[in-house]
Amino acid sequence: MAAMAVVLLHGLSGAEMFEAVGSESGPRQVGVGTSGAVPFVLRDGYLIVVEGRIGAQGHLKLVLDTGATHSVLRPDVAKEQMSLRRTVRIVNLDHVLTQELAEVPDFELGPIRIPLLPVMLNDLSYLRESVPGVDGLIGLDVLQGRSFTIDFGRRKITFGSPQSLRFSATMEVNEAYLAVEVRLLNRPVRLLLDTGVSAILLYRDRLGDRLPELRVEQHVRGASLGGSASLEVVTLPCVRLNGTDLRRRAVLLQNSPLGLLPRIDGYLSLTALGARRFSFDFERNTFSWE
Image (cartoon, rainbow, N blue to C red; front, side, top):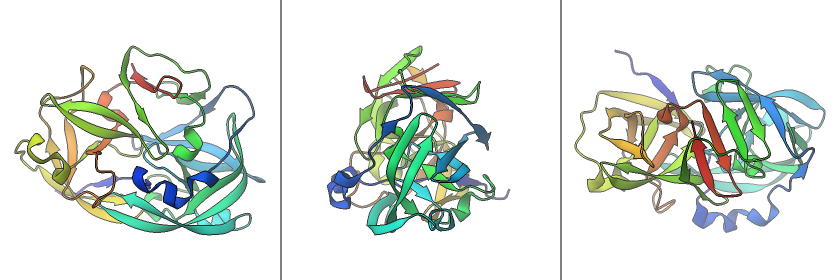
C-alpha cells in the first residue's frame, strides 16, 4: 500500500522563547463589531478555509490553524504591502526553523480587524494539493483576540460571545499555544489543540513509559511548513479528554524539538473528538464540544 500524506500545518513559537522573538510588538486588534460569523469551506475533512482581506486584496484564501503561533502569507501575496522586520524562530514538528517575519497593514477576518499584522513568509507549497490557490494561514496571533466557535455542520465560525457546549475541559492559554490534558490509559498527556492536523500526533520520546508497545501499521510522510517528516501510524489504547473517548487512530513522531515546549507531548486534532461544534472560550479558559 502506498504511504499516505498527512498534512501538518505547524509553525509554533516555543513558550519559553516567546519574549525573545518580540512579543511586545505583536498585533493589536481593533474590533469591527462585537461578534460576527465567517463561513468556511472544509478540505480533506479537517482543513478549515476562510476568506480574509489585507489592504485592497480581498477574497484571500486562508487556512485556520490553531496549532500555529504566527499567521503566514505567501511572499507574492504580501510583497506589495509588507515591511520586512526581522526573523523569528519557530518549532516545526521535530526541529526549529528560522523564518522571515514581516508586517502587513489592514488585516480583516469577519469582525476582526488588525491595523498591522506581523506574518511569517512561506510559499505554502505543501498545501497546494489540498487547498489549491491557498494564500496564507491564520494563527493564534489573530484568533486569540476573542472567543470563537467552529460549527462543522453549518460550516461557519462565530466570533464574539463564548458558547458553553455539552462537554468541556480546561484549556491552557498562553501566547504560543492552546493545550488540554488527555488521559492515555489513565495517565496524563498534554496535547496542543490543533485544527491543522488530521489525527492525534504524539512524540515518542516525550511519552516514554506512558506509551505502551504498539504495532506500527504503516509508515507515512507528513508534509508541513518546514518540510516533511516520517510518521508511524498506530491505534492507541483507551484515550480520553475529560471522560470523552477519542478516536484512537494516531501518528507517532520519533523525536520532539530538543529543549523546546518541554511540557507538550503532541497535538490533538479536533477530528479525534468526533463532534460537530467546538468552542474556544478565552474568558473562562475553557474548550468545549458537542
